[in-house]
Image (cartoon, rainbow, N blue to C red; front, side):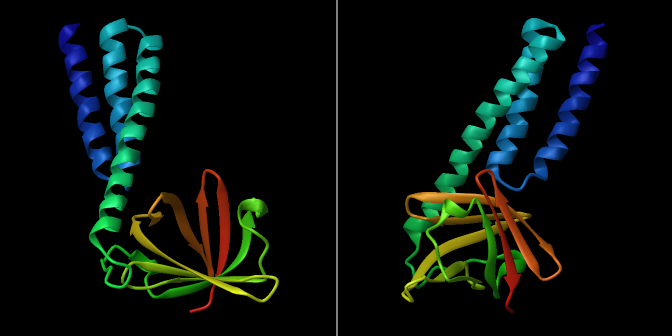
Length: 187
């Protein structure tokens, strides 16, 4: 019986290691790693399915929190080590050099009302958002971004946004837990 448990543990551990290597962000990697470790610990401590599931749930949560903090630390380091005009990197994926117009945003109250909003992903890791307000004034926001697989990470001192993105014909769809945006390609 002990030998069978060891074989199962080694098999699960091997699959787990392969899957972790493919995660896009430290938050996702942490969640996956924490879930696997928590499941193994729960099984070892309680020896039943309920303990395994509780261990997996707790481990996933703790792992995500730790991994997300690693993502935030990485973004903060990028902010501290680079000035607005000399910031450059190659993690721009297929967004670098593209320009988009915001078509829809849900929930609508996420941003103040506007007449138009254009987003330009520059090839050196800067994203420029130009908003024409209803009164005709124009606001320009300059932020840093990077792309890791299908995750868009936008940051500025004080905040970070991790959102998944994908393409549908000439549209860019960006979604996170608290918003969903659809943009139309301009170039």
